[in-house]
Amino acid sequence: MVGELSIKGVTKRFRREGEEDVIALNGVNLNIKAGSFVSLIGPSGCGKSTLLRLIAGLSDADEGELQLDGKKIVGTSYERGLVFQNPTLFPWLNIQDNVAFGLKVRHIHRQNKSLVKEYIKLVGLEGFEKSYPHQLSGGMCQRASLARSLVGKPKVLLLDEPLGALDAFTRMNMQDELLRIWKEENMTMIMVTHDVDEAIYLSDKVIVMSPRPAKIEQVIDIEMGRPRARSNPDFLQYRSKILKILNFGGNVEDISYYI
Image (cartoon, rainbow, N blue to C red; front, side, top):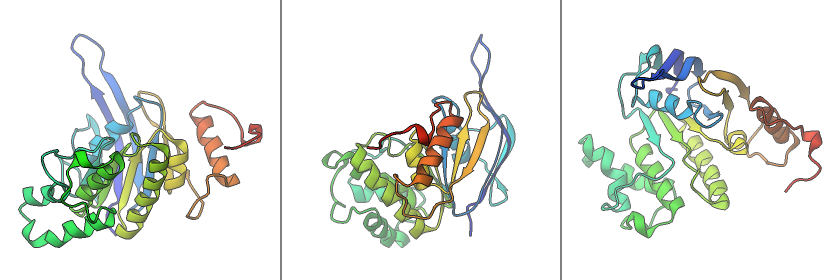
């Protein structure tokens, strides 16, 4: 299996003219097993998205090294797909052409036409191939963004709050879709989220990050089978534990009712 990530002593600074540097990440060490689903959670501005961008190759570390399957990450690569919070579809292209765009840029579309249809079907958009982004809901556009990232067969799929802009019911449906796709594709997925329940529901591991300059506060193994019930006592214990680490306090025993 491919898609194992190693992050060793990674520090990232943002330089500001006439002011002190902002240290976004400070000596981060992390190993992510191939084929796992991992969530990064922490306060806003703690460096979660910065770490994702370093893995994607959109930015370079000032210190330390990132490796994918033992090879140093240098620049962007189709091996590392990235899905943003808002669908970044081209409005002048229909869904089929949006999904096929990366293959055309790499000049491998002709021999991989069947993949475009396959991934449009995988994300549940069969029948909407000729539709344009403005004709679809936010959830459907995010599915198209997923298909566009998946069609390149990345080893690692990076998800930067991909469900944050969706309504609650669409979000829960999309969580199940992510899990289904992850199982079918057998790839490594790393997701940034601010939603504790979402992190527990989806992940093998939840990585809790400290406020800036960020470091890894704790790595929590979610030892629950799937599918997971959000009302399960173990689920609630994990939620309480993560909230405590994030300094929001409270115990499961303190909760007298659940919605």
